[in-house]
Amino acid sequence: MKRREPNKEMVMIKREYRCFFEGLQEEMYFEHIAKKIREIKPESSVKFRQVSKLSTLDKSSTNVLKLAVFDYDLNKIEFEKRVKMCKETRILYSNLNFDLWLLLHKRQFRKNVQSNNAYVSLIREEYGLSSDTNIKTKNNIQKILNQINLEDVKNAIKNADEIMNEKLKKDEIYVNNSFSYYANPSMSIHNFFKDLLKDLDIN
Image (cartoon, rainbow, N blue to C red; front, side, top):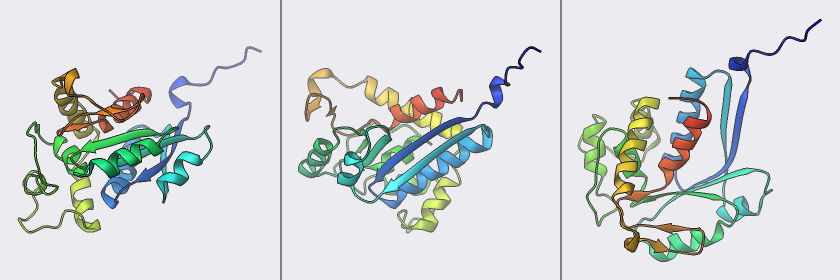
């Protein structure tokens, strides 16, 4: 009897990452996106497992997919120190901070800013929050995430690509032979999600 081939569409696709998240925003966001992926791709399993220390992450097995998610935060010395720690880890950075990435889900923003709070009022406006909302608390982060779906992620990727495509090579800041970055607004987080959605065939 001829062996029956499995239904290609039902083959389980598993992606598991060990991650360092700088803050609660990042941790909750990645969990939220994994949930959204499962909703439309039940045959896909995406998990982001957190480690508490960046040093622990990079020393773990090289067979594990590793992500380090952290911001520039107007601290060049600390930022570049962290970058140098990530020899076996994919760096997903935001410059100035993760608020920019959240904002790009709803609108484009190309302005260079000089304050870590520069995006807060725009986040409140775009996500329908009151003018005194603390966007870093767990409940308010969840209110923001409840308004983000995978189409919004695709929009953020598009907006980030537009920003990065305008960068000039001469403005690139090198940390080592494998990593460089640009002044804000800039990021690399969008490239990871672009790769992930493509890998899972989410168009």
